Image 1: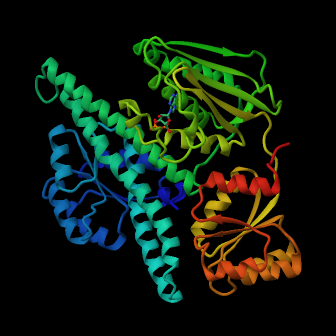
Image 2: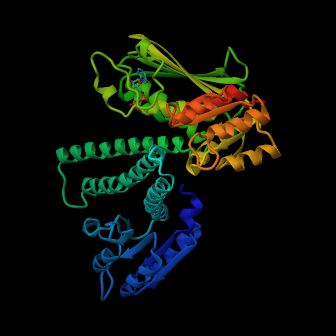
Image 3: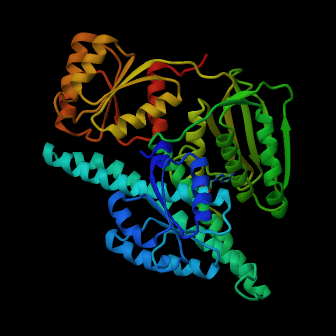
Length: 518
Ligand code: ADP
């Protein structure tokens, strides 16, 4: 998993013949926390430096005496044989940007430098580079592990992690050219590449909107991978929910008016501030309200409400209600599933326009807040989405021991449970697990089945002998295997099949240990 520390420690080489540019860029990057920066004014020295240090990023000037940036890129291709040049070019000339991208540069920054733009592009490029290297390393590890174990079944588990990594890398990879495409469209629209007539401008506007839409899809894909690898970081602050509801009304007011809808909002006064991640709850409310706008025909009405939850004083209740087309009753139970889109007989354009990830992400984010999301709907009359947000911060809960030889899975389970305030210990194998348990028994054990050394059934046998009916979740990708049959001898236990969605995992742990609230 790539952390912010990994990104800040990545090796960066700045190549520019002008001393002032070198020091300005270096200062910007050091100010942002980057630690491993080398600068050179000599383009010919780049090859040897890169051969020795394999930089994660080379920020390259294009116009230099003796050897220009294009020639430097040609030379780098001989070193980076896998077709990936970690090069970000810096240029003041729009025409050079396209040529540089064609020559193999991954992205560009415009001169004069804008701090925010430079930092965004540097961060994005390093993250992509590290993700590539990480994915390569994991594939090699998985292959080596398979050889050692001689068990082809492990491939499936390893692949689950590798595919997730692939999506994460892919999503980041798509963002870079998309940003370029959008910028070039803007350059042409603004008349910088020559005069543009009204029709051309209108068509370019459509192209720009499509880029923005695609960026939203990519963000959804990134969120899904973050959620499913436990990397979604929820940063709680105690805040009034009313401010967020009002913000959504303000932000989406123009879209409501443009579609000929009306909008109302009612927030019960005097409600307490609640522990939430502001950006993530805003994302949920924006998503639900955008859906309400999308699926309500002109003349309809949308209402946002905030109050105490009538049925449970532990929660505040936010509702997003619309008078739109509604959702068929038989599909209400699956509407929050990953990639689910409602099947209407007519198959309208709106429902085909999306990835079906929005409600899934909302559900996962609300669950990570210890809350719930519900839907009621009637065909032709409208839908109401309700979010229950806990009023109290969660307290430290039961102690869960996770036993799995796959470090990525251990880490993912640990992160999702810690976000829910469970206390988590992990072990990479049976001997370590039993040793930890003898020092301090957990309230629940999450157990993998296929492991080298002591396997799942052997550990389960020890648990039953020494800790009686201690609750156990067996989490395996091979529910039909012989190991599973052996494990059954030491039941009871709860079975989860890998890779189960994190929200289901959390719900199962909560069901067995109790949710963590004051
Ligand atoms: P997408 O991102 O593709 O819009 P969502 O997960 O947000 O997907 O929504 C899934 C499906 O649920 C949509 O395709 C739509 O058919 C249905 N849906 C969501 N919100 C509403 C609503 N307010 N009214 C009617 N249908 C809705």
